[in-house]
Image (cartoon, rainbow, N blue to C red; front, top):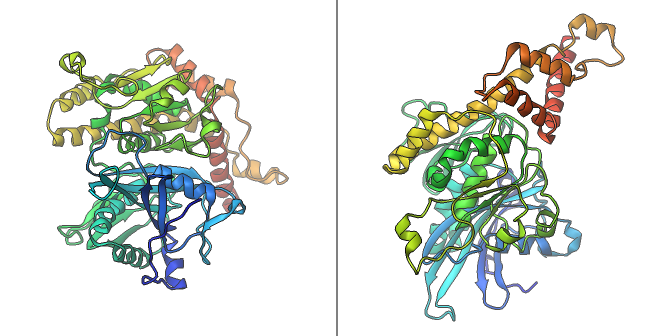
Length: 484
């Protein structure tokens, strides 16, 4: 792979500082566009071991895959699979990189395009990227939104300042609230106890928040811009979309920019909590990704796959997918009739084979429709109400299962009499669960009892159910062992 490095020789970091930094991030990366090879990494600070395919994946994923962008900056994110460094290391470092829980690297990119008379294309294209092992989108969007413009204005020293800021942060301990100083701002960050936990904002004591301070829930989708901006064309279909997510249905999310698709994918991923993530999700996916042929092929897509794309190629390649969410708003009749109107990819909307099981919340739907015609503040409020609504629905989905689960927990006397298999749940019986469901019902507003049963029959066949019941088993075992 052809390389051009930006010199960072004057910006050393000690081994101890690098180790502290890598509790939170792996490195900061800069990527420029080369007319001969396309996007190309120009610096990695501090140095990091990357295989050839990882470096190429990061470079292409940090740039938009569409031409719907003129001048300025935009932020987006991506998720790429870790590859074997035996393929040949391109960027080397003595410090081992952080181990990941899920086998993926997360990238948060600020892409900037500026006019440049010296360039053959007439402009300069650069991305500044945070690489991390932590799936904390709200935190790292906040960081890259500040770092990207600062780096473009002031250069390499901003990378050094950012890294030293991050290296001074406390350990990212699950279940804690931490104050993180970054380039003149204090971030009050709430870290979840586990990545599958739903997060809700707690109050920061008065006197603790400065004028420039920011309070965030690290694992949720950023609140700006309001997610409703991307979902205007599908507000009446959001209940079907939520059902597809919790039923581990694969979904193609098409947008005009990686900024749009990555926000939407993170938002959908958040709605799944506290149900464990059963498969893959890609906030922004390109045809250059090493996993391209594994994820996009003539076969049926993998269960639970959420794929954010901008290249029109995917509309053709994924025409057999059962669900396609196209972001944006419906064009007006005037816009449709304009001869110069250019439509790339599917028209904003929802194309699906899914038949909805639950009823819509008509009061919320009315609020959403009104907000789409209203102010940005109205969209912010409606977006927050939307998240609260669907996270509560996900929690309600699990109520009948948790109720039945209580009957599977052995009593202390049963546990003591069966010491050969200590602390195990009794076997899950579908038939017994449906008897319990029929007797007690479910808090979700199903259209009918038949729809209720059909929904849970499908959910018990999803890979998410297998992961969920395994986690419940772990929790019960831990409690019962403590009682023995």
